[in-house]
Image (cartoon, rainbow, N blue to C red; front, top):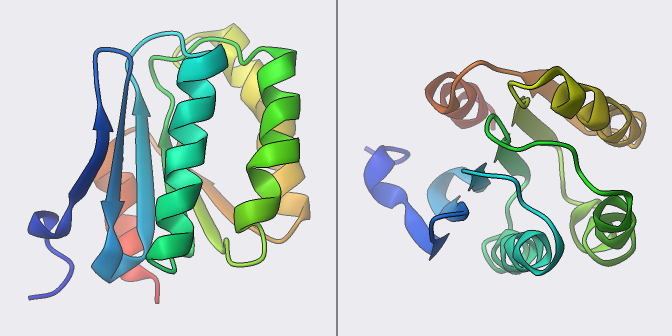
Length: 138
C-alpha cells in the first residue's frame, strides 16, 4: 500500500536534527533533538524546502518537542529565505510544540503567521499522531 513508513527518504540525520520526506504523501518532516539555531537551523529548513519543491509536497511536520526558543534572527531568516519557497504550495502543518513553556510561547506567533497565510495548522503530542493526520489528507 502507498503511504506506509517505508516510503521515507532520510535527507539529514545527526545528533541535533533529522529531516525526512515521504514523497508518496507529500510530507516533509523535521525533528529537532536539541536546541537548534544558526547554521544547523538554516540547513534544516533549506534542505526541507528543497525536498518540498522537488517532491511537490504540500504538508510539513515540525517535531519541535525538544527545541527551545527560536532566535529572532533565525525567525527572520526563515521568513526571508524559506517561507517564500514553499508558501504557495504549503497547505497543512502538523506541529509538536516544544515541551518548555518558553518554547511554546516562541512558536505561537509563527503558528499564527502561517495560519493567517492560509496554512491549516494542527498541534500534536506525538509524531505518530501528526503523521497519521497528514497522511489522511489528500
